Amino acid sequence: MNTSFLKITGLCILLAGCQTSGYPEAKPSEVLQVSDGDRISIDPTIVSKTINGKIFKMYGYNGQIPGPMIKAPQGSTITIDSKNHIDYETTIHWHGLRLDDASDGVPDVTMDVTKPGESHTYTVTFPDEGIYWYHPHVREDIQQDMGLYGNLFVTPDDAREYNPVDRQEVIVLDDLFVDSDGNNIPYGEEEPNFALMGRFGNVMLINGNTEYKNEFIAGDVVRFYFTNVANTRTFKLSIPGVKIKRVGSDVGRYERDEFVDSITIAPAERYIVEALFEKAGSYDLLHKSPLAEFSLGTFTVSDGQKLATFTKEFNTLRSYDDVISDIDTFRPYFDSPIDKTLRLSIEIDGAMGMMHSGMAGMEHDESGIEWEDTMPMMNQMMASEDFQWKLIDEETGKSNMDFMWEFKVGDVKKVQIINEEDSAHPMQHPIHFHGQRFLVLSMDGKPNTNLVWKDTVLVPIGSTAEILFDITNPGMWMFHCHIAEHLSNGMMGMFKVLEL
Ligand SMILES: [Cu+2]
Image 1 (cartoon, rainbow, N blue to C red):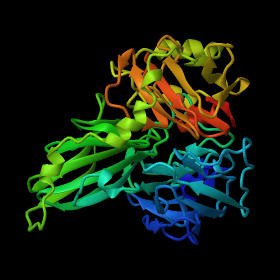
Image 2 (cartoon, rainbow, N blue to C red):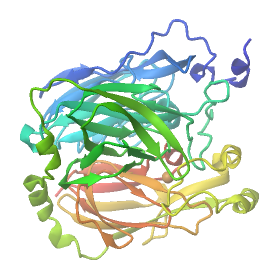
Image 3 (tube, protein in one colour):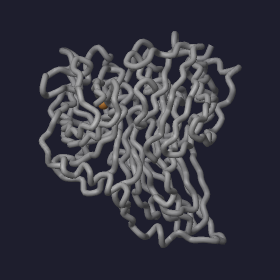
Image 4 (tube, rainbow, N blue to C red):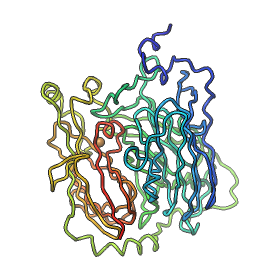
């Protein structure tokens, strides 16, 4: 019997070294082009996948990692049947879509979990253009980490809203945590392990694979759609030697294009970025943080004949009148008083707290982001019951599921999120609100002068974000930290939106 099998009593189902025979090899993601009224199936399935020479038992939607990319025209509605073929209860959350709450995929709120062998039908609407994604809303630390994620690509009504480009590439960023033999580190059985800081991986994945490669022709302009599906890792992306331009984020385009040196992308966030590969050569897609540098993949650019060149369009920084005029409606609210304040904090129990405080203070730099797990022993040792991650409502002093915000359709509300620096373990938190869209008006009092609609905001350690909600979608909605282990630890709350 191999040693990895011994380690995994009770959870053999998920780990390298377990029997994988009988599970089909995961296929790469395919594009599912849909039209209004279509009916499709997205089924979680068990697959096998080889990563760095080790065979893992993993999960994939429709046998694919990433799951199929559903490409839908803006304004369409489709029906999605989902039969659960995996060995866990699951649901599917359609992240970032302003859809009906009954199809939001949140168990115990608007639906029951889908048990193994059972099916559930979702009605999925695509009101806003941009890049979105879908994933389980049950034990994300395992199910999402093991391959259950896919993109939703909502194409705009007017294709001219984006510049012409030679290529469009969808890139899903992830990491996997393996031991020195390359075997997956076991997951917590009853509840997530590594719940203090989340599970930082040590193998970087793009679209589910190591050693991502792509080939372009010199002069190519490429539009990348990045999604971070990692449990906890924030990536800082760049392509040294290549000019990059930030065009969009979670819910479509910014007011204006901007040339940038890098893109910081937290779990669940998306960024739309264009790059001009001007000269032949080899270029790395880097994740470079103050603590470490990883090459995530390589672009090989060769000389070749091009019929058309989009260099001029790339070098022109556009502003988008449709985005600006949409946001104009909300500008009168930018200086209005704060409606709600949310504090991000943690409580650590007795002895663990003492031990932890002896080690704290070494985890982050001035960026306010824990880029790596710098205290893995502590992270592994502390069980979920030793501490509680908290979203605290300032008004009532209540936290997590003990309070419920109430809004009305048509409300425009300002929410301040304060990430306490002097808590027992300060850490950045990507906070995701379901079912609505918001603008990040300012960070630490510094106004954002180029806005984009978001569904997830990264609040660094010690920072205060001011966000403005466009409350349009009635129902029962969740908000939570998108670090998978923090969510499972209970860092979540609810808000109710009443019909007019
Ligand atoms: Cu968090």
